[in-house]
Length: 77
Image 1 (cartoon, rainbow, N blue to C red):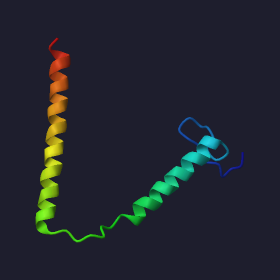
Image 2 (image 1 turned 45 degrees about the vertical axis):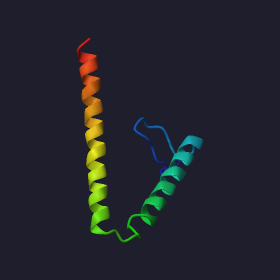
Image 3 (image 1 turned 90 degrees about the vertical axis):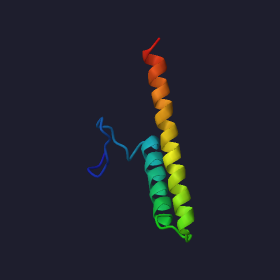
Image 4 (image 1 turned 135 degrees about the vertical axis):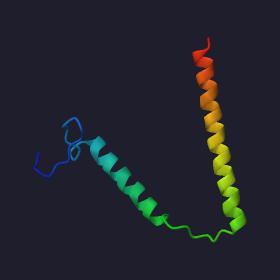
């Protein structure tokens, strides 16, 4: 191993292994996609922005209700 190899948290070299190269390639591809779509290309009207905000709040509320239901079912056998 050369001194330039990257290591994971367990001290294993990532550069030489197939898994390490695959992981590096995937993260590079994800970074490329994130950079490409970092700025929105569509103009949104205020009504669309409000609708998306309401939808986001609704989905968060559903998740909270699901977590609450799970907690009550598990804790009150």
